[in-house]
Structure formats: structure tokens, C-alpha cells
Length: 199
Image: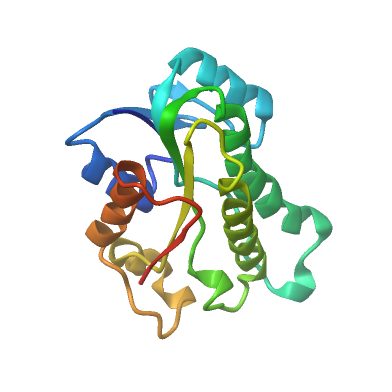
């Protein structure tokens, strides 16, 4: 399969590439690096990406910026960062990709643990994660041409714990290999409309 991976440089993106790269042709996309440059929050940039890639079999997104901070310090602008980037950025990949993904192809998005197991300073991330779950469940029943749509919602990856573990007190880490396999299940399997929790 020919698969676009947006956000390949992060810990989740690396797990995806390790799992899928052995069997498929990956096109690595990012804002500043990769085979193709793309800014998910800019619909024109997403359209341009699909024009360059041509028809693909699957799109995987592990990208999306969110602001972390104390709730009383949030502004509309800092809260909107996650909605514009993590939510609408990934929604843009789907909307623009409806004509760029082959019949029976798939989209796999990424949310995260915080909408079901919150941490301090994570309200914006929790909101974005919940919105992505709602989008996938609602949009999957309208996908044309047997296209499939899922979102993977992983806990804190083991490889991320040295940097972010202090923000997640008491959270169990998730092996990155298990997270990679969840994306393989979404891309290579038959499920659709699922929030795929990996804990």
C-alpha cells in the first residue's frame, strides 16, 4: 500500500513507521521535514499535498499541536490552538482526502488519553481528543466508496515517559510496539468508525 504518514517524527509517528514501513510504501509528511511539507491547519496546504502524492491507499495522522496550561490562564487564542491544529488539521486531511484515497482505503487519526483520564493543564488536549472521537464516529457512516475512518487513542508511550511522565502522575505507560500495531489494525484491517483505545 501507498500510505501518507503525517507527523512521522514524533514518538507515535516513529512507532507507526516502524510497524507499517516494513510492508508498505510510506510517504512521510511534516511541516518542516519529510518527503512532502504540509501544514494540516491550512486547507490549501493539505490540498497541495494530495496533488503531489496522487492517489494513495491510506492516510495516517499522528500530528496536531495543543496548548497545555492552567485553565484560568487560557485565552480563546491559546485554547483555539488545539481546535485549529489537532482537530481541524486532522479533519482537513479527511475532507480533502475523500477524493485522494483509493476505494476501500482508510484514514487513521490520533487523539489521546486525556479526554478519559485527565491531567492538570490538559483541558485543551482533552477537548481536542473528545472532538476527534466524535468526528470519527459521526463521519464514518457517511464515508463514500467504502472508505474507512478510525482514531487511535493511546496512553503515554513508554518512550515518551522520560520527557512527559511527570505530567502524567500514576499513568501506566504503553509499549510503543503495541501502539504501532493499533495503527496497523486500522490501516490493514476492516474496522471503521472506531475510537481505538490503547492502554
